[in-house]
Image (cartoon, rainbow over the protein chains, first blue to last red):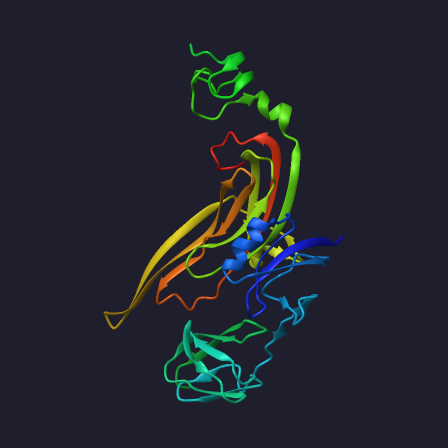
Length: 140
Length: 169
């Protein structure tokens, strides 16, 4: 069963908040002051902001693209070089939550300098956040 | 022995039937009552809603739920995050609550980072026509790169006036 959602989105078309409750002019005015635009759309399921954004003419939602990176190896030893391909240019890469920069091409090259488990996160506008844990073992 | 049953005009609540908890004076206890006829007579759903709130990094992301009743109504709000959804359906929900944590990171006995984070949801009456739900996610220090969680909420608003002091059921 579909429901009508009042959705507020930002200048990047990201869904900021949504509700099946009605909204009045006080709310739309207050949200506009924050830079959020209002649109009313029907959904079969709840509009999941992690998966959707508002399309260019605000007539519907569009599905965020999923990252599909390919790692040159499933795990690595210290001093190994790991190539991660299939990452679109403009992707911001985070290692253990800290930004390591923004990709200018489509291959990420990592050198394993220390053993341990590392969290690799990829973020890009209109993409679903991607996160994986990569293990670097000791010398073999 | 404490007065336990009142049929009449209670100082807090007005006319009705009230039964206090064992040992509590029904006339003036501020603790929860065992029975309150205001519930039995008036738990009629006015409206309900569900939705999402994407966090910002300072704990101020919110949704405004209008009911236009002109008074503060009784409500029940529950929330969760994407981890507790399956096919768009909640598998687990939480009452309004917030948690806070501080952390300090050390490398070779030297402090290398620190930060703090809050997480959860709160709710209250913005005015007599609107209820405000807040995604309480709030980060500081080195945690400001954390992904902003989306809060999923559902709220039921009753015609009954809010006797919970804004906490909700």
